[in-house]
Image (cartoon, rainbow, N blue to C red; front, side, top):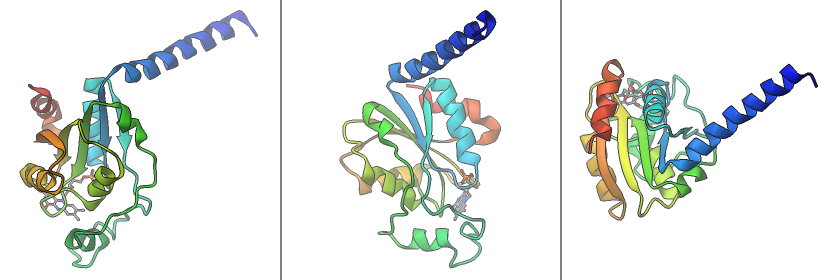
Length: 180
Ligand SMILES: Cc1cc2nc3c(=O)[nH]c(=O)nc-3n(C[C@H](O)[C@H](O)[C@H](O)COP(=O)(O)O)c2cc1C
């Protein structure tokens, strides 16, 4: 191997191991569900600020535009929100959350509250003893009802704070979420 190529490989390795190690060193993780991309933008900005990993909750059955068409009474998302015990399956492994103390959990507001797949996530991993920070994106609804709903559904969990992130003022909203 040429010297210049070897140097390139070594630097790439150093960069990669630095990013892996920097995630390992933090107690924070961002876990989010995003059906149409907005919450992903907020989650990635938050993760960048925290220097933490940002992990998407992936639905086993991906939500199509028809599934999300809330003007249609019987679209999949509406049916799920009207059915308290439905738990949409998650496709991916999110066990990285097990090693973290602070979980930043993000979602879009659906009918005033968190989508059911957030309950699937909460019920699939042991979040007891962790500090949970909620964030959302929405068309205008606040996150307050999500916080009170999740608190009463999961009284053993420790929800610290909740913040709606408006994409137009994401930096300020992220600061508000992170402010002690
Ligand atoms: C089924 C459904 C219900 C929704 N209900 C609300 C709502 O009650 N209040 C609100 O402000 N926005 C509501 N929205 C809009 C989303 O919260 C908003 O577009 C969000 O940013 C989408 O995030 P995402 O792109 O990460 O999926 C709803 C969207 C869908 C698909």
